[in-house]
Every structure is written in structure tokens, then in C-alpha cells.
Image (cartoon, rainbow, N blue to C red; front, side, top):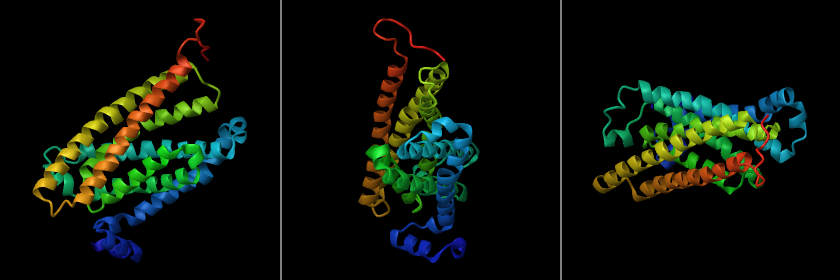
Length: 280
């Protein structure tokens, strides 16, 4: 690891204790990413929001402002990380013919960088959702914790191939945050929210439920086979930790999808008297 000298000693020490072999190569990227997102959350989003939506933003409660600013960060993160993940998926020549062993154990600097960007975001996300647990709810903190745990395990290195695939969950995030923002801007039930809702349901269902569940099944199959044939390489705790974390995220996605359907139906179903909701 020739780049270890460029990182702080604690990164090497942590990597040695937790067997995160590639962590020192990306520790600075993780901290830098988390710091940038904290800056977007605490400085950039409040300033831009007061300029673009002064009447709405200034009347939000402290916890609602935290939610607003967190969603602004999530919007930026989703676009940024999805671009880098798609770039790897479509341009890495080693992926199409990768064996099960390679999908679990191979490492490249490009994939490690994407993994670091994701870990930095989840580190920041865990801080915010824990600090404002009453606002975001336990499921948000659980999502952040599982995401951080999985991305950190990836620095063994382990399952980096699938780590990039799971990042495509974020393809639905911009539409989710736009939906929430339209509510706050008093555009609930508008045509804009309807069109965005269609995009949200489509991308969430495709990226998280279909693609995500399929990738979880493929990963579980590769891990189970490796656990059976290479038990000394795949310890039981690693197999169970990754499996439980991914299953938790998958279950949360189905839970959130149901909540989304309920929320959209509430906004766009005609009232009982048959009158159509107003369109803006």
C-alpha cells in the first residue's frame, strides 16, 4: 500500500485492527466527502434556500430545516454518486466476464473511490439522522448505519462489484426529494408533483425493488457458495453481517415503497364526493 504514508496513522491502525486492507487508500476521501456534505448541509443549503425560497424556509421549524437541508444534500449526493457508479458499470472492461470469486474479492482504485464517496455520505447521514432521530425516524438511522457498515466492509476488500451496483438505489432519490420539496412549496397535488410522482414510483420500483432485490439475490448466492467452499476466507460473521444488512435495506425499500404509494394516493385520489383535486 504505497499510499499509506499519505493518510493519518489512525487509518492504518484501524485498517489493521478491523482487517480493512484498502481503507488507508481511501480514508482521506471518506473524511473529505463527509466534510463536504456537512458544509453543504450547514452552510450552502441554508444560504441558497433563504435566497430561492425565503418565505418558506424562514418559517420552517428547526427540525424541518434540518430535514430540508438534509434532502438538499441527498439530492446532490444522488446525482454525484450515481454518475460515478454508472461510469464504472459501463466502462470497466473487467465486469462483464467477472467470476464469482472476482465479484467478491477483486479491488480497483476506481471502485474503491466510489465506495469511499458512499462511505463519506453515510457517515454524514448517520450523524444527522441520529442527531434528529425524532424528525427522521428510526428507519432513516438504520438505513444510514447499514449503508455505512456495508461500505466499510467493502474495504476488506469485499463485494466491491456489488457495492457499485447497489449505489444505483440512488437513482430514485432526486425524485423523492423533489416530491417532499413540492409539499413544502405548497404545490401539493399540482401537475408537477404528479409527473414527479410517476418518475419517483418508476425509478424507485426499478432501481430499488427490482434491480436491488436481484443484486441482493446474486450477492447472496455468491457469498453462500464462497462460504461453503472457502470458509476460511469468508468467516461466518462476515457472511451474516453482509446478508443481514442487505436484507434490512431491501425490507426498508419495500416498506418505503408502500408508504410512497399511500402518500401519492392521498394527494391525487378524488375526494369522496367525486370532485377532482385542484391542479396548479
